[in-house]
Image 1 (cartoon, rainbow, N blue to C red):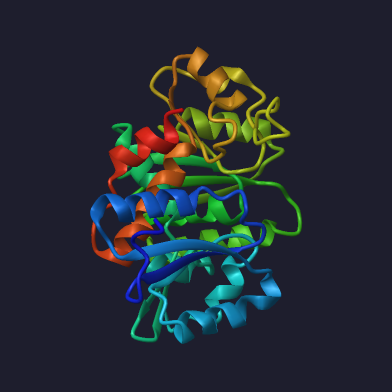
Image 2: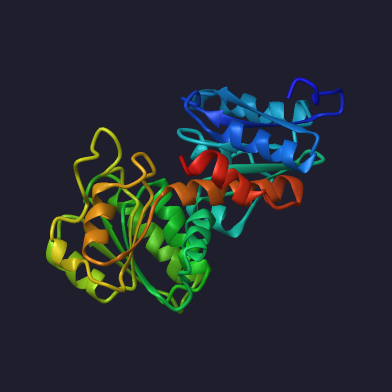
Length: 290
C-alpha cells in the first residue's frame, strides 16, 4: 500500500468507538488494490460526542465518505444533507457519501442481510420472516426486508425501555409499505414465538445472544420450532457458527451465518463509494473462509 498512496489518493474511513478490532480497512484496501482504485481506507476512533467534528472533517478533507459504526450511527443522521429511504425509516446511517460537499447517509446493514440470503439462494420477496431483536441491526433488517417485498414481518423484542422504539419502527414500516403485515411481540412470549416461526419461511436472530461471551446461549429455547425448509439466519458473526445455527442445522434447517451479512453490507457501501462492484469472491476467499 505504501507504493500507491499519492497526492491524489482519495480518503475513506470508519468512524466509531472502539474501531481497533474492525476488519473493514483490510477488506476495503485489498479491494481497492485488486481493482486499481486510487483510494485508501483507515479507521478513526470517534466517540459519539465528537461526531459533529468528524462529519465536518469529511467536508474539510474532501473525503469520499466514511462508514459509521456504534455508537455513532444515530448521531450522524443529524448532520446529513440527504438520507436514503432505509436510513430515513431507521434513523441511523452506517455509510456516508460525499458528493462535492453534499453528504448523503445510507444504511447498508439490512441490504447486507438480504443479499446474504440471496447468496444462499433465499429470496425475501413474498416471504414471512420472524426477527428477534429491536436494536440497530434488527431494525435495519426489518426495514430492508419490508422495502424488498417481504409479505409479513413478526418482530420479537424485550419489553424494556426500547420496546416503544420497536412499536414505532413497525408503524413506520406499515406507512411505507401498507401491503406488508407487521406484528410486534414480547420476546419472553415463547408460545407466540413458536407460532410465528411455524408460519414463517425465515427466522433471524438480530440480538447479541450467541455472541462471545454468550456463545453457549441461543435465543431459541424450544428446539421443536426448527424444521427442514426453515431458513435460520444469525446476525452474530463471532463465532461463525452460533449455538442457534448448530441446533437449527441438526434439525435440517437451512442456515445462514452473520459473516456474509458483514461482507455484503460492506460490498453495498463499496458500490456507493466507487460505482464499482467489490471483488466479493476474492474477499470471501481471503478474509471469510478461514
